[in-house]
Every structure is written in structure tokens, then in C-alpha cells.
Length: 81
Image (cartoon, rainbow, N blue to C red):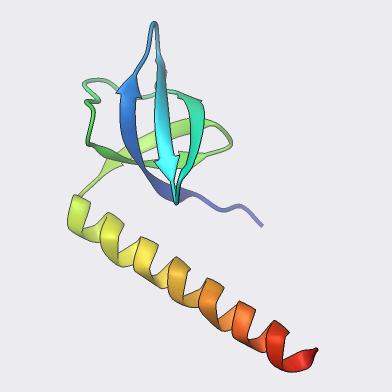
């Protein structure tokens, strides 16, 4: 199964690279498949590559769903122990 996730660009680096933030985790990614990415943009990230830009509202909705899933998993794990 493959998973692509929305991330926020916090720094555009040299060449085709950028630093993105995913829930406080910063990671260097490749922008080789996109053009005109700016700080503050949201992109879909898959295996280290930005695949497309994403509307900030859609990114917020998707990230909220991931947070909800994470909270549910944590609650279930706590209940099981």
C-alpha cells in the first residue's frame, strides 16, 4: 500500500529541494516534479517527492483526518493495555 501525505513547505532550498513540516517533523524533499513551489504552499509528498500542490483548505481537512485517526489508534491502544 502506498501513502501520499500533505505537507507544508517551510523552506525552498538549492536546486530542486525543499524543507517541509509534517506535525513538527522537518524533512528535506525533492521538488523535481513541480515548478513554482513557494514557502507556505502545501504539496502531496510520496517517497520523498512532491507530486502536486494542494489547496490549503484541503490540506487542513486531510491533516485533521490523520490526527483523528491517530487519536483513535492511541485511545484503542490505551484501552487494550
